[in-house]
Amino acid sequence: MTIFKKELRSGAVSFLAWSAVIGGLMAVCVGMYPSMAGSMGDVSDLFAGMGNFSAAFGLDKLQFGTILGFYGTECGNILGLGGALYAAVTAMGLLAGEEGGHTAEFLLTHPVSRLRVCMEKLAALAAMILGLNLICLTCGAGGIAIIKESVEWGKLLRYHGTLLLMHLEIGALCFGLSAFLRRGGLGLGMGLAALLYFAGILINLDSGLDWLRFFTPYYYADAARVFAREAIAGPMAAGCTLGVLGAGAGLWWYGRKDIA
Image 1 (cartoon, rainbow, N blue to C red):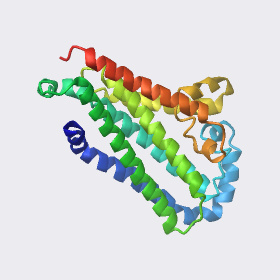
Image 2: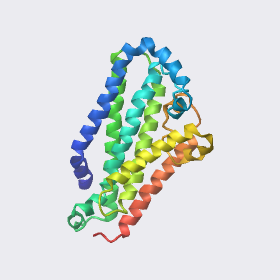
Image 3: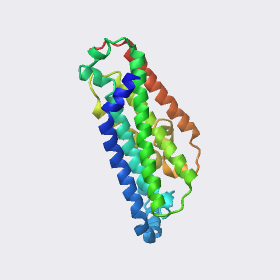
């Protein structure tokens, strides 16, 4: 597990920075809820009547005046997009970075197969994504406990589970893409995460684009759908399949490509 540990050490600073920023913002948002709770009912009614804007972000379905609805809207968007960007940025540099940084010559001269290199890097990516989500869950749940608000913890944990799955899917897709590059594709990874995010918004705006639910993880990781217990098993299974196929394609190509 030498490569696994090395990747964790190399990404430690970035991991801590992203975790601190995202988790800190979530804690601050939760801490603001008591001071805003008195006017939440009026705000919820206002958002519910804003037509397409409300539909785009699921504000017409979430009860913004409750702690759960507030959490899903504010903290969910912070962790959903922030975690996706972290997963994309980290994954894109794992394989392509070896060639771009001219370290592949050193790594691949050791008695270790390319498959093992890829698998340990992929395991390190999954561990860092899991760690970030656990830290953010702790910050969010800790904030709710501090302000002494009652919440349906089952729904909250289920929502965080879908966010974790979404981040793993995006990380796997970007990991696969990185195998086809010779230099880090930071912009490509961030662009993919943003594209999937906007695809999720388009589904909410136009029912004719409902087929996109099988391609963007933002559909099954949407707070409004999770809290309402809508049917998301199909899109979730499709997302897992896409993630596995993306990572598998990267493993296959990296094992046969000519390393520069």
